[in-house]
Structure formats: structure tokens, C-alpha cells
Image 1 (cartoon, one colour):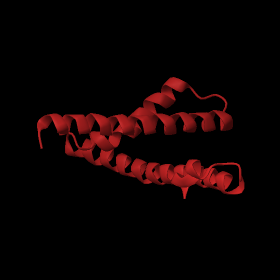
Image 2: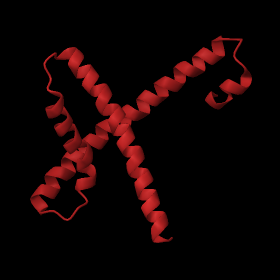
Image 3: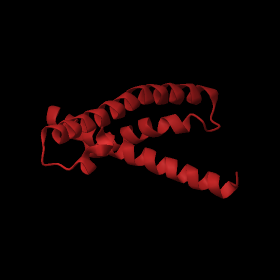
Length: 115
């Protein structure tokens, strides 16, 4: 594999991961502002970025003490993040499929990808 393909794949992977983290972080902020009215957005963003990037930072050549802490935080974050994404998208597609199934005016072509 050439180095250009590896760089393009890494950029695409980081773009997808960044976009998903942006979506989850924004939804979490909306939920937290609903529950707790006085949340500083800058503090939340700083903490969220450190937690979201900790999984990648754990792979960098850092001192062992920091690497263990960051690796633990990153592992816990991925343990929360991945099931959230899977649940969210499954729930979204379930309601889309239910809508297509119960609506006879929808064409079969539009609902085929959901079955």
C-alpha cells in the first residue's frame, strides 16, 4: 500500500470520527443544558475534546503514567460512545422502516434499503 493511500485513509477516518464526535458532543450539550441550566460552553467543549481525543492520544509516545490515564479515559469513552452510536442509528432506522411499512403510499424503491 502506498503512503498516499494510508494518509488519505487516515484523514477520512479522522474526519468520520470527528464528525460523529461533533454530533454526539452537541447532542450531549443540549441534553445537559436542559438538565442543568448554567453550563459554561467553553469548559464543556474543552473537557469533551480531551475525552474524545484521549483514545488517539493514548497511542502517542508519552510518559507511561500519562499514557495509562489517557488510555483508561479513552477506553471508557469508547465503551460509552460506540453503544450510543449503535443504539441511536438502530433506533433511527427502526422508525424509518416502521413509517415505510405502515404507509402504503411510499414506493417500494424508497423503503427497500431499510428492509
